[in-house]
Image (tube, rainbow, N blue to C red):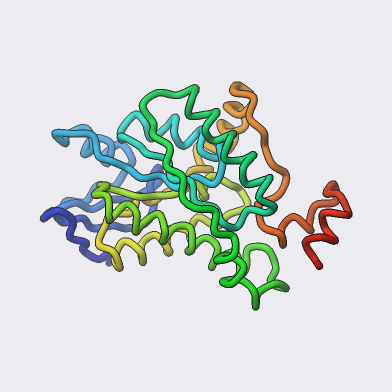
Length: 237
């Protein structure tokens, strides 16, 4: 059974699946995306959503979908990205996308790569998608959640589930735990579904966005055969 979360004197009950998601609100079961949208449209105001974004391309189709129903601020917190030059390149691409869209604010968090290194220092040999990636995702989502709570957003979520390389079930479990811990609604997602990932590729081409060929951290970059050997040696040493 989904648990009850109090937020601004309203009761939200969450169960899995948005876009394929079930929301329960005030005890009334909403069994489809359509019902959830009907609920959103019934509110006196558009809910404020803080959207953690890993990059411009991944956020493109997510923003296209969610701006129909939410007032959105994009929160760019990705201390995992290495090297800093790559981090800044992805940041600039995110801003480039938002400059082509309307009424979406960009919030830049500090690039604290050392924090990521400390968190993952004992997990260097973990496979992609394992314990290291779990800690990385939780780090970014918790930072987003705390910011959303401190600044009175109605929901928080992340673009991460748009990637076919990310486990949406794990992402949503983290989101659920954080929503309970900080008492703020989390927007469940599997944004890759309903051709969301395909649409992100189309929009990246439309806006001429740079699409990176590795997830972001120094560990994932070593997986890429196209990466310059000197850069790999610099990472290893």
